[in-house]
Amino acid sequence: MLKFNVGGIDRVLRILVGLALITATLMGWINAFGWIGIVPLLTGLFRFCPAYTILGIKTCKLD
Image 1 (tube, rainbow, N blue to C red):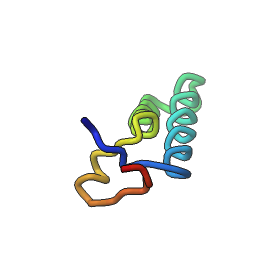
Image 2 (image 1 turned 45 degrees about the vertical axis):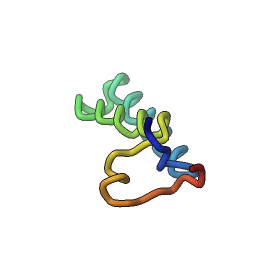
Image 3 (image 1 turned 45 degrees about the horizontal axis):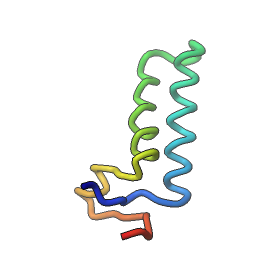
């Protein structure tokens, strides 16, 4: 099972940035690279970031 390592403001920002990038792509404001917004959206929703695990970072207070 994955341990949570994304929390608080970090989580909210990831979700907002992800949604903004996806929306901008769907509206045609930016090119297809905007689909990269799926990554921060999913890491925010699942509260787990593989890069944080590698770097030893944890912004979540839950154990």
